[in-house]
Length: 421
Image (cartoon, rainbow, N blue to C red; front, side, top):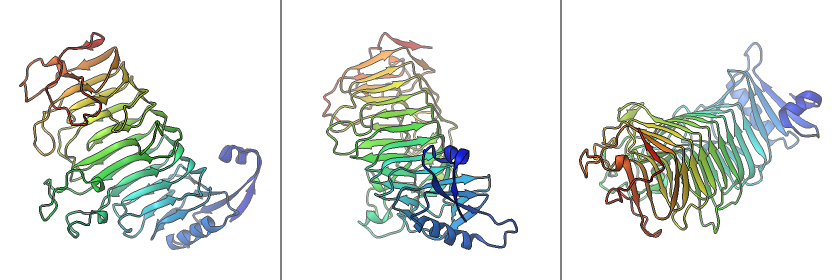
C-alpha cells in the first residue's frame, strides 16, 4: 500500500525537496473489497505517522464517524469517482474531516466530500498555522432541525458549514466548488414554543467561514459557491476576527462566483481585505432552494466591523446582479469602493414577505472613497415609494459606535464619481 516517491511525481505532489512517504488507497479492480474496508484502511493510514500524504484514487469511501487528523497530512484525490461521503447520520456538531491543533500545513486537494444531508459540516480546522483546501467539491450539508429539541438549549442546534476554520492563519481556499449548504425552514421567527430565533448564532449557515484571533493571511480565490441557504442567516463567504487589536486576517477574496445566498454573499468583519473581481448573483424570485426557505436576503457584499472600523478594506471590480437581495454593497467605516457594477432587479420583499429598503450601495460611519461605480436598473424603497431616491444610494454619516441597521433617513447626495445607467 505504501511507497516512497521520488523524482517528478514527488515534485508535482508536494513541491518539497525531500522525499515524502505517499500512501495509495485505490479501488481494487474487481471491487471485491467494499466501502467498509476502505474506511478502515483510510483510518489506519491517518494513524500511521510515517505517512505524509494519502492519495485516494478511483475509490469511494463511506464514513460512519468523523475523521480526526492531528498531524500535518495531505489528502489528495485522483479520478472522477473519488469521493468521501457520510454513510450514516453524523452527530449534530461533527465535521466529516477535522484538522486539530497539531495539523498545521495540512492540505485537502481534489476531493469530493459529500454530506448527503447526514452531516452538518464538511471540513473543519482549528488552531492551524497554514492550511489549504484546493479544487475540492463540498456539497450537501444540512444543519440540525431546530424545530425539535429542548427549550433554552441552543447549544444543541448546529448550523451547516462546508468549510469552517477557527483560530487559524495563512489559509488558502482555492478553486473549490461548494453547493447546497443550509438549514431547515421554520416559516416563522419563533422556536417551536414561541421563543425568538432572531440573533441566534447557531442558525448562521456558512459556505466558507474563517474566524477567530489568530493573525495570518487569508486567500479565498476562484471558488464557485451555489445555494447557501437559511431562514435567518446564511453567508457564502464569511471572514471575522474576534478580540484582535489589529486586523487578524489580511488577504484577498477574489474571482469567486456566488449564486443564491441566504443573507450575504461575502461578509467581512476584519480589516486589510481586498474583495475584488467577484461575480455575485441571486437568480430567480423563488423563496426557497431545495424546499428550504432562503429567508431575509441582505447585502451581496457587507464589510462591517464591530469594535473598530474595517480599515484598509478595498471593494473593487465586482459584478453584482440581484433578483432577490436588496443591497449591493454595504460598508461601515473607511473603505475604498471602486469600479463595481450593481444591478438590482428584486421585488423589494424578503423571503418572509417583509418590505425591504433597497440600496445599490449603503455606506455609513466614516469617510469612504469612491471611483467609477456603476448602478444598473433602479432600486425601490417602500419608505419613500418608488421615487428617484438617490438612484439607490444611501450615504449616512453616523458615529462608528452606531451599529444599528440603517434602513432609511440617509443623505441622498450622490457621490460625483458614481455612474448611473
